Length: 331
Ligand code: TYM
Image 1 (cartoon, helix red, strand yellow):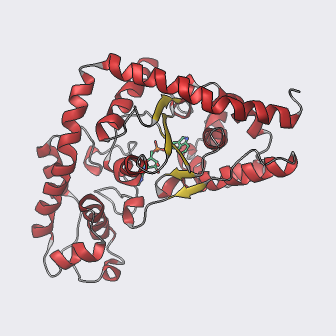
Image 2 (image 1 turned 135 degrees about the horizontal axis):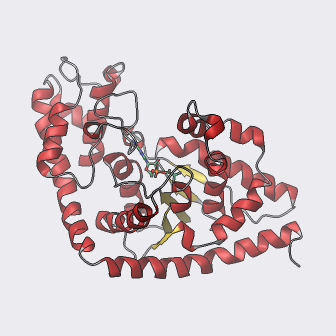
């Protein structure tokens, strides 16, 4: 079992990343060999500020370490420090089909009305993501629900390459999506759109760097409805905002939705929200404290990233060499 996953270093971590992916990465360190990277090559598919990108990589690495990723145990590195990702991505662009990429919903969402003006990199983005995974012959890719389509594409690319060149080089990966609603944490202002760094309203998300007061205020102002909470999670159907908050509570407290509802059934959000705010503060406040310490010592984070990159290159280079051999690019 080998685990690979990445996160774009665009802005800070938010609760969606944390519950949908990172806290599961932390747990998987106990069970498997893990590689985690800052997807800076993915971040440049849209306009970037170079100085900001550099500092975001370090900040996001520190946030992952503060959340529990142990660089002594897992391989943590910036994607761009391992050129094998890009080299393999080119090869896989020749395996992936235009029709497959045309089906990717993220490109449609991110390019919006400006399809003609989007970068080619934004279009081929999922192929680079496939290279990230296949380079390390990963078996499990822990991601939130929104990345599922990309992991399935990586699977299709692996299978086609293996078939075309009569090899078993690539391991078709499995998306590993957490049960329950934490796989898709929604905006606090609109239960039908996902919590995201790109939402213009900061009130829509809880950031790792939010103060205890800010967390409490965002929860207090979160959109809800006037109904009391039901006993049965099925009755949350059609109540997107209520459902989201119950899902967040379940993920944060490690309970099932049934257990959360058993505690709050019949009560309104006036009772539920303060309890949720307390649970979030208890989760996030220690992480924020560790992040502050790591920020004071950036050299240590840089050293972890450099050591991680060296290790990742060692692990990935043989796969690239084998792909080149299979294609007749080398003997
Ligand atoms: P990114 O940077 O958008 O998000 C990082 C991880 O957080 C999850 N996530 C969420 N989960 C639940 N609810 C939400 N509201 C929410 N928002 C984000 C994402 O699903 C993801 O797991 N393309 C990827 C990065 C990437 C990658 C890879 C991932 C590049 N190469 C290879 C896995 C394997 C991305 O942009 O994630």
